[in-house]
Length: 230
Image 1 (cartoon, rainbow, N blue to C red):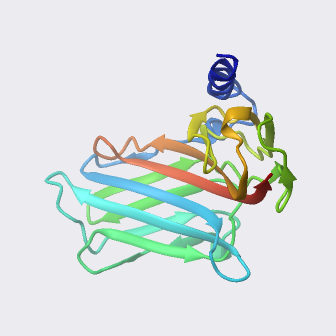
Image 2: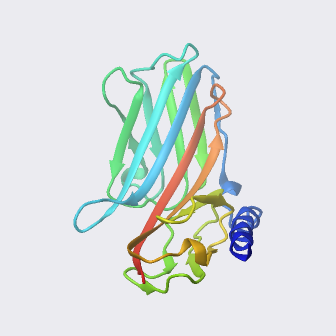
């Protein structure tokens, strides 16, 4: 019973807290404007690549459809960020006719992202999502060895407090809630495992006011740490 209560308490702790922080990424969100004729969903996804050695990689994906849910081709789609080379990235429709516009950069852009989509008189423009920043996992340290069957204290940096964080290992979660920068995995969810992996996903999101219902822009940063439980 005690272990069940500990797990419930951990989830509750993650679900409450710092969304009102002066450092909240949501405080910099801007829904933008537009013609209300396009359904636009944008994602900025940053994580370490699977290359050897791993390297920073950010992927931009924007899907554009019309009011009949048909793919919109030939749109001009850009994502701007002050830390990008030239200040913005122009996305390319891939494959042709898909209405899916993509691009990548070998970096973790800091700061906020602005999305602009224009096709003739149809547009969604000036949508800003506050960038939560790329977190660093402080505990457990990479390649650390921790003791099984005991509570495991996690901590990570919050460069700018995100709208939501999701925490998981191979034996715990995923648990989602407020971005507090700390969480304790209960002893019952910390068994012996030679190759454990902690994944922390932090994200911010804003609805796009100038688009059809469901239009939004989201920024997601993922950090992982491998460690051993014995």
